[in-house]
Amino acid sequence: MGILKAENLEKTYRIGKLDVPALRGVSLEVEAGEFVAVMGPSGCGKSTMLHLLGGLLTPTKGRIVIDGEDLTAASDARRTDIRRRKIGFVFQRFNLFPTLTADGNLRLAERIHSNGAGNPERRREILRLLRLEDKMHHKPLELSGGEQQRVALARAVITQPALVLADEPTGNLDSENSAIVLNMFQELNRRFNQTIIMITHNPEAAAACGRVIQMRDGHIVAS
Amino acid sequence: MKIFDSLVTSNIRQRPLRSAISVVGVALGVALVMLFTGLTRGMSNDLQRRSTNVRGQIIFTRKGSMNVVASSANLSTKYVERLRQIEGVETATPVIRHVYASGSLGFDQIEGVDWPEFARMNDLQMTGGRGPVANDEVVIDQVKAARHHPVGSTLKIFGDKMYKVVGIYSPESGARAKLPLASLQETLEATDKCTYILIKTKESANPLEVARRIDQELPGNNVQFTRDVFASVESSIPSLGIFLRVLVALAAVVSALVVMLAMHTTITERTREIGILKAMGASRAYIVGEIEREALLISAMGLVVGFAVAFGAGFVIHKSTSLIFEYGWTWALVAAAIGLIGGAIGALYPAVRAANLDPVNALAYE
Image (cartoon, each protein chain N blue to C red):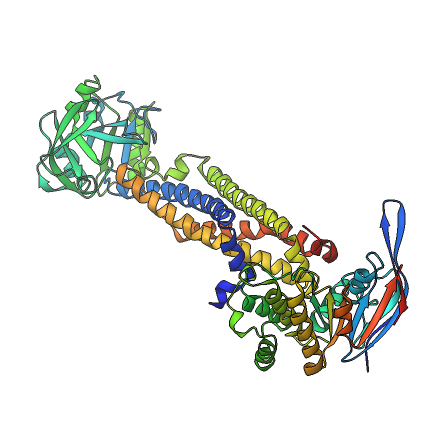
């Protein structure tokens, strides 16, 4: 079943008096449970596509449907609501709240998602899977990069999103921690049938995915 | 504890200086409102309490010889006999009311009276010692006596001139310290003069008619009822009500501005975090709510500090001066509302600005 359908997506940025096209007609379908890597040189439109798929940006043209809901036809408030219910983000720089403990970061996600009514069983399972049980009372600065990214990954999936969008999640990690984090993405994908789209420059990371999309100059050139 | 692991509380703890400045800003407004209104109310109630114990119903003065903060002795005591002969007057007694600078703050007043007559007219009883006889003797009420002035102690009233406390009377009535009339006349070089003559009417007489009669027989003077002369401080100073309202408005503006500035700074510092919240699906209302909750928590802490400062400062000022503070629930609620509403309104603009941030730009913010 298609969890994501993007049709003929275009995105043009207006910089001063210049129109700068970032995406020039991208179409993409992702099935539930797929683990997709997006590769391509810097400036090819990968991050723009990820932001469009996550509803953080609106396309200049085209249509995005996530889990049956049309993101492009939605108002800003509706897009935020779809993002809250259906999408989890993982960033290169982890983007954890530094003033909160790991547990506080997860609880914040649960609060935003469902007013704090989390699923304790899923929470336990994810913490076990990501080997975070004993890290919950630490603040981000007390954790290693790999641990921080695992907390960020837990935060993204704890609310059972239909789709996880990861923007170079291993970009700030050494090879050992990259391997651990990638392994955990794979585990989540396998264990929970979690759909993941991951931007990466790393061929080894792409190799861990079930499908690789190549982008260049705002187009998908290989899928 | 979970409550300390929320964005609101962790942000407050993470930026202690910014939080402390905001708390102090709100506290300042609250304390100002409480202290000023407490002082006004305290002084007004004190004056009213003391004036209700003055049994003479009518006050006879020269025009312009007496107000709340000053008085002069320019009325001849010869009027006393003439007043006593007017129909309906039971008794009349001369009083010098002298206002003088007291300590480093405020002013105080003393009365020169013909003690036996004055005490009889106003039902004053000695609870200790005796009435003043010699020119260097003074009697005081129980409230003043409670401030380390027992019988036998001395009081400094005019420069270095010392007066011996020879008696304590009750209930409190008019000025808290009373000298023999002759003593004050001598000190003020006002022989045969007084500030006003206090008149008690016969029980069978109508005070209004007696007052009319006095005015007819001794025209050109002021004939007033005691209750009007010792009116509340608020009505004696016509602009006080406006002053209090302006003070309250200023306190609200100070609270709002301090919180706005603090929240504006914190929003700029946390732009990236707001981008993360947006990426996580936090709605505009959620973001506004988080910032407002933080502002309200800061304001609530400001309230607690403000009330504590007001009560503490009021106590210290009362102990070191004769100023009286009486706090009322109404003004306490107004001060609380100012702190909370001021804080909430101050945070509104930064909160809305945060809620409207572009998520992609916010995430890229360094």
